[in-house]
Structure formats: C-alpha cells, structure tokens
Image (cartoon, rainbow, N blue to C red; front, side, top):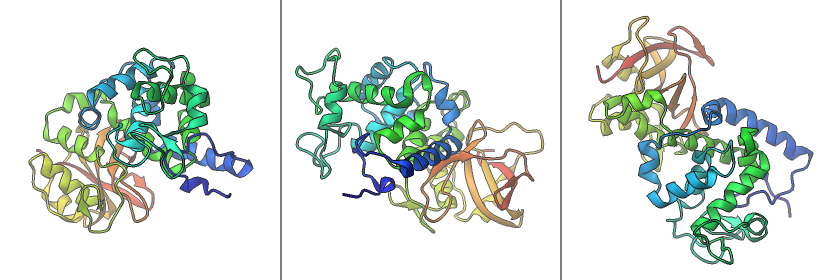
Amino acid sequence: MTIDLDAAPAGLGPKIAAGAAGLVVLLVAVLAAGAGTGIASLLGGGETTPSSTATGQIPATMLLLYQEAAATCPGLPWTVLAAIGTVESANGTSTLPGVKSGQNPYGAMGPLQMLGPTFAAYDQPVPPGGANPPSPYDPTDAVYAAARDLCANGAANGANLPASVYAYNHSQSYVAEVLALANSYSETEAQTVAAGTAGGIAVDWALAQVGTPYIWGGETPGVGFDCSGLVQAAYKVAGIALPRIAQDQYDATIKLAPGDPLQPGDLMFFGQSTSDVTHVGVYIGGGQMVDAPHTGADVRVEATPTTPGATWGADVLVGISNPAA
C-alpha cells in the first residue's frame, strides 16, 4: 500500500521504507526542525533541569525513566525521549487502543507506540526494573527500547536528532512537534531566573500550548489560538489582563527602551509600523519566541529578531514590551 509519509500516524516508527523521495522529505524535515524549534539548545545535551512544563505534563516515574534511559545514549537529550512519550500516549496515561493492551489501528503498542518487530529489535538487554520477557506495554522496557531506536538512527553523540525523530515517525510535522515540545521541557538559564515571575509563568504556559492549531480568533487551550489570543491567555494565567488584539496589546504595554535587556515573557510585536501591528509572540530567551503563526500552522517555537526595526519575513519587529512592568 502507499503511505503518505507526512501523514504517517504516531507510532509507526522506522518501519516505512523511504526511497529517494523520502530522503528529500527527510532533509526538509531536518532543516525545518533545526531552524524552528531550538534544535541548537537541544544539541547541547548534558544535565538539564526539567521545566515546570515538563513536571506538569510528565508523571515523576516516567520523567525519571526518560532521564535514565537517555543516559544510555550519549547525545540523546532526555527531553526528546520525553516529548515522544508525551505525543505518543501522554506518557502512558492515554486510554486509546494499544497503549495499555492490544494495538492501535496501525499495529503500534505500548506507551511509546512501537510496532512489534521494531520493539523486538531494541528490547535487549532487559533494563533494570523491566519485564522479562520484555513487553512493549511495560513502561521501562518501552522507554529503553525507544531510546535505543533513537540512538541507532541518528541520536548517538547528537549526530542528527531530527533524523532520529523522523526515523521514529516519518512525518515532518511530527518532527517539528516533538522537537518544539522537547525544547519546552528543559529550562534555559533565562527561564530559571524568571521562574515565578509573571513573564516566566506566561512563558511556561505558552510553551505548554505548542502543537495547538492556529485558529483565527482562537483563544481556547487544546482547541486553537491566534497570536494575540495565545498571548492574552498566557498572561491571564500569570495574573495580568491584556487586551485581545495585537495592536491593542502593543498600545497598552510599556515598551522597552533601546539597550534594555530582554526577559522571558517580553512581547515581540510585528507589522509594518507601530500603528499597523499584525502579529505578536512571547519571547522565551535565546533569540526565540513562542507564537501562533498563521492559518495552517500550530503554536510553535521559532527564531525572532531582537532589535526593533529588524525584518522578519515580510514584516518588521516594530517593538518589544514588558506586560509585567
């Protein structure tokens, strides 16, 4: 049968043979993911502190499993493994077919949604605390098998993380979603400093919405956001009321002066001028922001200029503000 690689469902893993066309798609996926989801920070590897997004979404036992299993593959960030677990089964909490027993419609099993032959290829040696014989439904066996799968397909020594995720599930959108979510699971130094502040709370909440579809006029978690709806909702959680429209948010907040340092939670406004603001995102540090970009896309993390007047696509960065000031 013919399978649309970009539409491949979660859990197919590296079971779809990619020919020449697949290699082209792979290169596109790698470049797109690397440019738009903070791949440089993921490649840093090493010991990282779980963000409040991670601890809020991942049960403590699974969080520890991801960290321990990733440590068996130098170069594989635990955040990537955790993001796959979240996307595939909400870290084993999903009640969909195939997670606890049986198979999903594509034959995938367990909390990491692996096909039987793929799991069998990576289920040895039995990890400490795993089932014997190994079972794809056992969280320990599943997480370690997934780590070995990623390690064998590009994650070893951080050689090509996007390729390893693409091998796990042949879908460009899957790669982008996993890497963006992984980026949100590790606290940057700036986020650590900002923890507990209104800006830090808004950043963490906005990052937790990564993967939510863009819907014009949207302002509902799990359903859809537009750019200003995401910003308004994030700051509402942080205890700050903002207007609904990007232009009004720009007008209502205090702009940074030239030379002022950026902080997580600052708002990045784009458009043609200060009286024609058409887009807004939440700065997360490291030259990146989280935003709801446009129809046909999802909430995501992407690079942003940090100097007002700099171009960003067809727009310019018209200003930066601090809603908490």
